[in-house]
Image 1 (cartoon, helix red, strand yellow):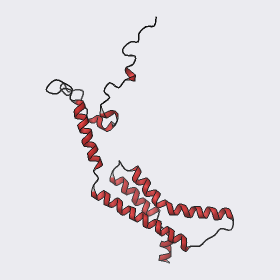
Image 2 (cartoon, one colour; image 1 turned 90 degrees about the vertical axis):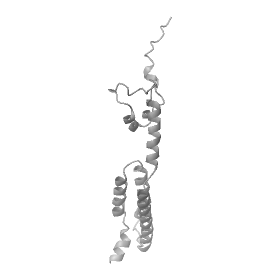
Image 3 (cartoon, one colour; image 1 turned 45 degrees about the vertical axis):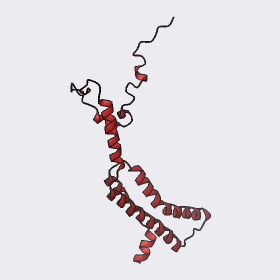
Image 4 (tube, rainbow, N blue to C red; image 1 turned 180 degrees about the horizontal axis):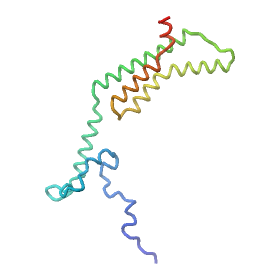
Length: 162
């Protein structure tokens, strides 16, 4: 006859406080009451108040992160327009410089590099916006500013300056 398992054998497989929002968002663990405080885990009626307070705080934090500053939205839109202009500039610049390679392989590689030059600006913008969605705005605009320098349509710039 097998022995029944001890009650603590399955403790690692259970979520004792499944409603605790810190399980899904580690940044909310700071909202938990401090361990050294004697009445931190009990309200005036003597019951635990942590779950309800943490759920309310989690909802407030989510609403605050969803609300973007109008300035951030405006600057992101301006950057999108700049990157769209860069894409148009690359299309015009590639159309104005008719080059062909001496072999088929070089011609294919050259046309592929032209394609990459055209799609680089929209891909850079999409990557920066998606990767810095939860980050600080300074990181987003730093990467967008770097992209404006790197992705400049050089055939147009050199054609205007020459």
